Length: 382
Ligand code: SF4
Ligand code: SF4
Image (cartoon, rainbow, N blue to C red; front, side, top):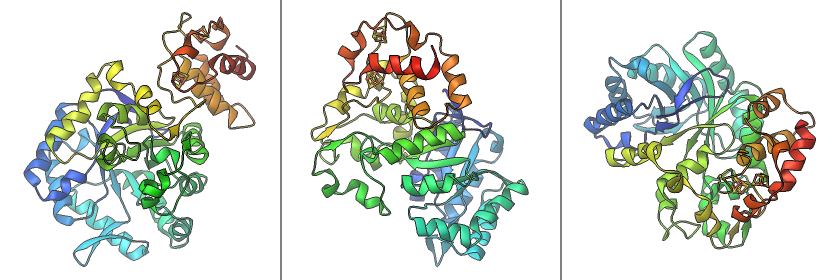
């Protein structure tokens, strides 16, 4: 298992995490086995958005004797009311829900306390005005949560929330189909037939801005819906009309700026093992570039997808990284120090490019790599 730093939190988390979709099927024996398989394979991060007390208690039981082996990302506005899940913005309900959650999980602290599922600007206003953000800040001051997170599918809302400087971890839906769609307050819009009827070109600029801003601010992104709820794995139901593999979906998400860990929402041990198998997949198996370039009606012409399909470079330039740092530098007026430092530690730089053009012949997305190398020299100086 490979590990990545979760933004500026200092947490070193496994790039494959455990989602909790499969926990909700009241098969608590399997839930414990999922934690066993996760631990055996080096997974040290999991997400818990669901609020069913029986399930939370089962997670707490599964963690007995190994609490310190996992970082818990659990959602503080996901409560249980009238025997069902409720996304609450009522401060008293949220406070009670937090106490209940921490008791059921049988722990003293939550590593990342997620403000749960905010997809609308007026909902974010409620989170601020109803005292929920302040409650999360006070939990952090008391050490009961160690970091504050937010989960969202909407880049506009997420950008607004992270601009407060209070959000340290963002749980966001990242996959190559959602990434084409403009911000919406209704997550169903991202998957509707109408959204894919017209030709689509390139990543939505606000989503790109979100990932790049998170990278610049040191906010780690944990990913939900990397497989589009499974639809992206099936050509019949995928809006792209082409099936991707789990390894391609995971690799796509992990290639985006600031992305740290992909939550595998496995329903079975086999599904979890399929996600873990990403760690041993070959470069060819992970390669999503050709599959994406074969999507009918969808084009990423000229946009770097950080797929590395253009390699090898005779000068050993890490072309995707140069493109990524160039894009990060270009979104701002001033060159951020972190981006300058990341660029500096590359072993070979744009100034080593001999403009042979071999890479451009291999890029499925028609990126002007030679131009990018020249731009990178202008921006970074070498
Ligand atoms: S330049 Fe093209 S091939 Fe290379 S990483 Fe970017 S999209 Fe992929
Ligand atoms: S054009 Fe530059 S970056 Fe591309 S393969 Fe040639 S040397 Fe490498």
